[in-house]
Amino acid sequence: MKTLVIGSGGREHALAWRLARSPRVTEVVLCPGNGGTHGIGPRWLIDPLADIDLFCDRVLAEGIGRVVIGPEAPLVAGLADRLRERGVPTFGVGASAARLEGSKAFTKEFLARHRIPTAEFRVVSDAAELSSALETFSGGVVVKADGLAAGKGVIVCEDLGEAEAAAQAMLDGTSFGEAGRVVVLEERLRGIEVSMLAFVSGTQFRWLEPAQDYKPLEEGNRGPNTGGMGAFSPAGTVAALRSTIDEQIMRPTLEGLAAEEIPFQGLLYVGLMLTEKGPQVLEFNCRFGDPETQPLMLRLQTDLMDVFDAIDAGRLDQIDLTWDPRTALCLVVASGGYPSSYPTGLPIRGPVTSALEDDVQVFHAGTRIEESASGAETLVTAGGRVFGVTALGSDLADARRRAYARAKEIQFEGGFFRPDIGRSHETETTA
Ligand code: AMP
Ligand code: GLY
Figure 1 (cartoon, rainbow, N blue to C red):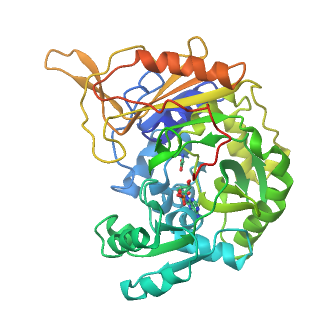
Figure 2: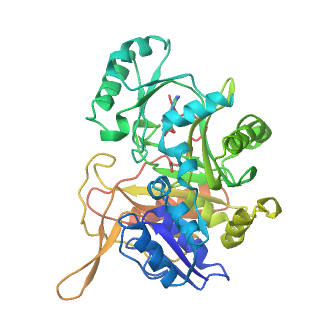
């Protein structure tokens, strides 16, 4: 079967790499893919959202049997709904469920309605209400832009003054444009942060193995939040809490969605803080996490195509996910300046072929191939997160050693990575 993966990041490279290993897949097409995905299959260099009907026409004309949508923006825009209406089996939730990611205010209100543990919050859309809303918080405050902001619209504030300034800049449109016109103010939680990903079909779910993400830019979890600077799996901290998370968070969430007639067939990413009061929901995403998907795809052994079919058919409960027992660790190599502005078009040197060698797989993210007038091809940077160097190891230290050894050989001007991915993962993430 021909399969089309939508997106251009490390997550999509990892999904395409895994799908290419399925005996059921004859060809993986990427739209648009990146500088490392050409070894997997052809690329469509078009924007599916520019004209969704035209895009669906092409999917049908080219005999694509399964579409897999990586990023959130096409889900929020309803691409999965439109593909399904045209009869194309699609992995990815519809627009109504994607609100769980597309609007933080919607999600907080949903959590409150269904009594699912989460931080205390206030939703503010008028600057005149800001000071009185902030006064209701006694401890630290987290300020969040309501809409999509590429994982960067959250500011964990040290004091009320900083929170007021951050919220004001969101409300007047200076920091996140339209995404910040509504702001969620939240009590700051403390504890260990974990991401849990589950395949979901209505009220049925199957957890993927736990993965730990590192969102802050700098060593020791300091600095601004990014999309994620590294991840590893399995992450041990949640095993003992699994049944609490099922009962207090997952079941009420899926039952709440069903009661509100919001169909959910796809992936639910639950961002949790393990606090003294138990696990609390930080956020939901409606798609695979990036970089978490990179180590997860190195370890997943079940055929993804079987999982996708089971989700569509409502028989996810008949699927058992099997995993390579080894540990996988992904180290993100980023452009100097990320997550703010950074240059692109910088030549890259080093071992970046996307073949699994020595249990190391270099997933590409922000790369592209530049062709000179003479036809010579050069791999250059094209984004903030450039590679996810992902390694399998007998344990965390082994996976870490392999990933760092390879990342050090990859060079481009200004390129950097966090030195502590997989090192001190049990420390408080919001210290
Ligand atoms: P979100 O996109 O909502 O998950 O927020 C991004 C990051 O901000 C999270 O991964 C946490 O590290 C941090 N964060 C979000 N909400 C809170 C909170 N209520 N308390 C402490 N940290 C938070
Ligand atoms: N790594 C965080 C995310 O995918 O949202």
